Image (cartoon, rainbow, N blue to C red; front, top):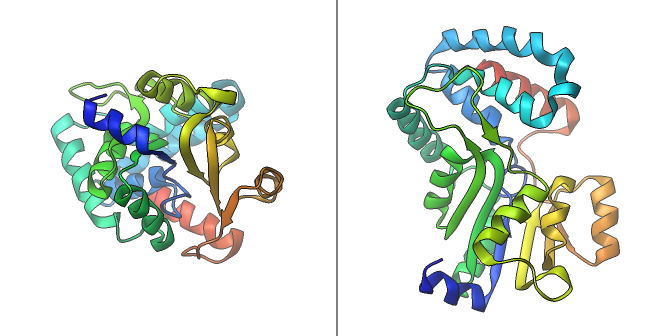
Length: 245
């Protein structure tokens, strides 16, 4: 880190998840929708994805994420970068939870080091972080090639991997396994390794199980309004975005 970022870290640290935390959506299906609306023939990836579903348990989260990214097969890097800029401009900050943008702004006003730590692909997480004014951005690193491969190599930035990468930048958690003056924000139990490294945390629309954990730990719980109603509404939005309808 630069001396300026070190100084910010000494004043405080704020770690934000992206999907479900700053924005209600899974940005991976949002970006897929963004691409399919521009090149409809890419919906053919759905056949490949459906064919691989029976092997989901064997492939795991990382393997299925590679399969899902097949909708980008053959895209040249310049075009991907252009799609990324257009996508982020269309959704950020306008579709973010206003309450969460206010919390982010307070950290920035207090001079804290702000890190966007997401499991979504880093090629657009970096642009989201730039637009929202984060100091650093970390996401799932996807193989950087002139043309996107059918099954690009990647390292899933999820669970303990977030702690590992953040520790590479900040150094490992110190007293009692926590980073000093730190606050984490997430909606997901997958982020518990990161949250447990923070002195304080805020959970965003957590599940009942994560709510129980947060209540026991004394963490803040916020429930901003979502842009759909119930599980069926969420399922429909996921379906129509993943298919570009």
